[in-house]
Amino acid sequence: NKSGLEKTIKSVVSQSFHDFEFIIIDGGSSDGSVDIINQYKQKISYWVSEKDKGIYHAMNKGIEKATGEYCYFLNSGDFVADDRLFENVFSQNIFADIISGNVLKLRKNEKYRVIVPHEKPSLHKLCLHSLPHQASLIRRSLFTELGLYNESYKIVSDFDFFVRALVMNKKSYQRLNINFSYFNLTGISSQQQNKPMAMQESALCLKNHFPDYVDDLLEYRNFYSTNIGQTILILQKKEKLYFFIE
Image (cartoon, rainbow, N blue to C red):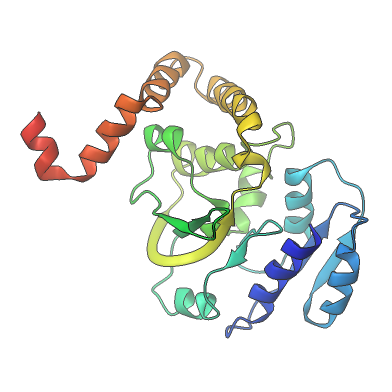
């Protein structure tokens, strides 16, 4: 993704905040991506281009090279929303293990939809909508304590990690009303043909972690995935209207 990669790199190196490492893990691309990386290598802390086992293997390789307090993941084609993002984030009272902000889902017509993360994530809420890693800072020590991303999953390992961290281990969480990044909908998790795999993997994840409750969790998720369920979720955000309908 040569052109997408350059857009991602430019959005990172243009940050007004400079106290970070910039790590790029490429899977052995042969489309000119390495040429793009070399153009910016003076501003990159570490990079490698070699065949890997997929997205989460690449993310784990990046974690193992990182030394900072927090890790922040961008896929090629995603880009930071504001040149002052990190400056704005770290001017806040940052204290939590996981910090999430808004992600802007970018459509083909260049329009976008703002996705606001959960104020207080719960297992039920994560089952409906996981936190976007493109808009989340994760304390690096969590990966040492809880383990890296599960590479047996192709799509939902970030969901699995957030469940392990926030639900099973009660790690602290903080939501910021800041736009973190534009999220490109051409990625593997957004492609329609991969939706069945994502559903199967998330069901397996829940079964592994919560075998006694998995049927209830899946029933809950499946209902709120329907048009009626989505309508109820929208109405719940309009408290007065929802109370009237009840």
